[in-house]
Image (cartoon, rainbow over all chains, first blue to last red; front, top):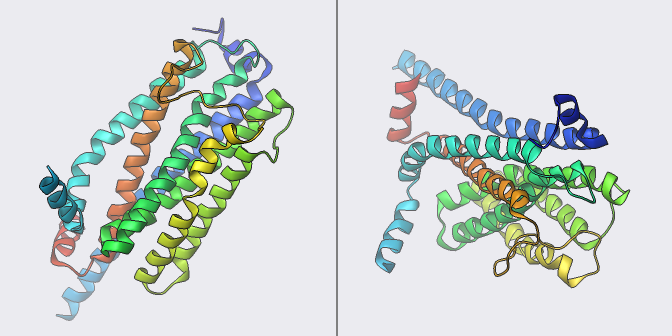
Length: 59
Length: 250
């Protein structure tokens, strides 16, 4: 470990704000990039199920 | 050897084949991405030494450099996929190109943002209009252009063609970004990793960086596959194989 304590780790030798801003926003953006296609797929599956039910009703 | 490549190339043109094979690959790339990015982050944040001049703000490198590398690689891949779709009228290539844009734009934004946050304590400035930073900003605008073009047309083929042309024209920006620090007098420092020389930094510093770069590539692979598969499901929804697939789920 480079740091002596957790509070030192958070402080990053005075550069804590910069380091955590950078890592924080990047983490959020990476998560968003995963969540969006997963949600889109669910939406596609739901739409298709709805369409099939409609077609089955009319046939 | 060439025959296998041609056979593979033709198989790639089948959305169904692409969908099936990526379904098998995604779990592996996802596991690799999670593992590598977690290990790389912990290593870079807590175990790597600080820079003797910059101190701990140096640790931003472990996000900044992978994101910047990916931003450029993804644009290059997007241009190639667009070109293949343009020349061979391959639907899968168009879909891959479309799927590259959002994650590529994200990587470019991350590179710019983390670069600015790193620049403030290091250079005293959030932004300078030097060659590398400016050409990366142009890359972000090019990505936005490609994304905008995708929604600007009613016909998917026209959208794909326009995006491909923009990507191919814009790809000239990639060597400009890469060599900007050599061709011009820039504030941004020159490359750490070179193809033919040893890195200028010690192993304890560049090893976690390499882990993060590979992790980011795996992450990109996962997102690309997920998005392309969604495109396939949408465009091929009239086919039997897609309807069979989706009726088994829902």
